[in-house]
Length: 388
Image (spheres, rainbow, N blue to C red):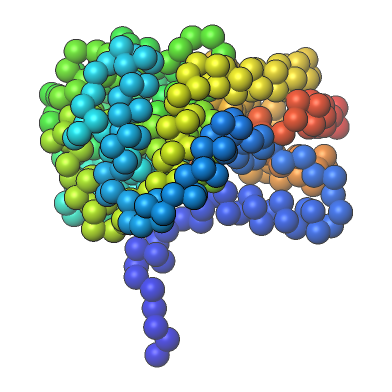
């Protein structure tokens, strides 16, 4: 008898970004002049000062021993300073800040700290696919709440059935939002906190795109009264500093709410490499100019794509946040069919909206992770689809 994997592995849906990588490799093997606008992986270097900090830290013998489970004290102090500067919020580095091996790691481990078998987690649809899979790993029951274009991709908590809300332990929010770019304001967070407190639910706010915006600075859920009583925010260096390979992030929140995540982590990992944390400290020390530079890159790229896309007649939902553009499929076909046409006929790889859930059907996502002229060419090729 063949040895079988666990049912949790058998029942996992295909990971869309792995499939996109495979499509990319096949197209390249055929010699296609491929323009890949599918994966949100920044293509430019982190700030030079962070690289130098990392190089210097490599020469310190102590940095090659086991790191702290909760992160270097100096890193957590730098995070506290950044949160004060960014939001005028005070957090204690000793208990209210937890270093993560990338925000994805923290998001993945949080359900293990909170969900018992059968507990419900409320997840956005469309939303990042790994929310669902990691809830399933923990034995929880994913329940996807719809995000609709007419509501600017913000949830209507009144649509969540009372029996589901009564069983829910976690509510996932993600603003600025992947894949749509939607942004939440303080009035929305007040509603979210009121809903969570009424049902004893912990909010997991994924703030990975907090620094990628054009004009309006996105707020923190902790800026509304009661936010600290029911929420954790998770941040990432991946998009803010073009450092996806570092795998560095952090969670912020009340020490009692962070404790279950800390207990999971001290059982399954040994903390993030100090050298990477030193680079993170250097990044935060650069202040606003470093993030402004990143925002300016995406602003120019967004303008290059939007010009061709909108002039061609595509409908776009674009708030100027995240490094994505959310575009409506122009034909009477599924998102997958349209994206297959874009690849086969124009050599442009984009992500079908239904990869993020059923509410994404009829849309596709463009990632701004190439030079502006290459993005403009990709958008122009997509425009040609409307002419055939």
